[in-house]
Length: 268
Image (cartoon, rainbow, N blue to C red; front, side, top):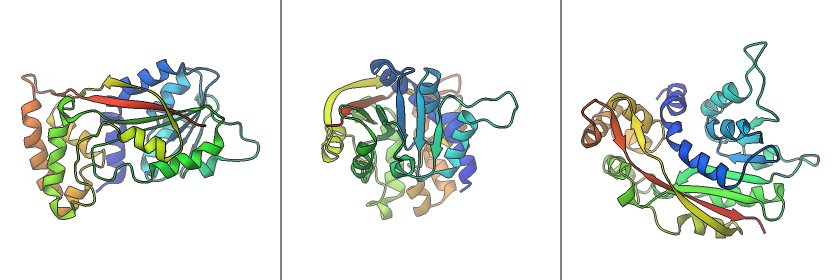
């Protein structure tokens, strides 16, 4: 697996599918010049870039994908041109919340964890602990935003994700598909000692120029890695292509309506 190519596919194809989610959250919480935002699992940085464009000071941490983080640096900390300027007070770190703490660092007044949970078994493991580690870097009442997949009946992509479960059956305990549950986000927040304070649902359709783009985009999420490990890349590509066929339109594009959910929780 070419991790750099996979990260580029995420940044150029898949990540934009979540833009309506980012926009809805930023609009609701009135992100602007007074916002000091910490993005957990910031990936290639599109959500941070959108916040920075609203005037926010943004900090992103990501412990698991240096390839995506390198793309975030290209977006938010450009240094290849003498005319390029970073987007405000921007920091990007490979690691977790502890890596951006410090006695002189101002408290964050917004935290986001936009990586959606609720479609793979165990995909929320560790998130509560990560949020607990973040709380000391914020003030009381700081909004912490969690994101998750909506109900399977409203997420067309759910049927495609089941391909990963079928192919990864020998590894079923590590990465099998599961339907999103109603209180997934609330349970994570409560385990972290946060107080739920509102939620919303946002339509985030997955649209692709063609089947090849759809396959590359979905593979870039990492949700099919267990399937590739249990079989091989050729088999996964073949079955994923077949699963996408019902969603292919006459003009060759692929369209899958989805609904994602977000929860706003507050530090105590």
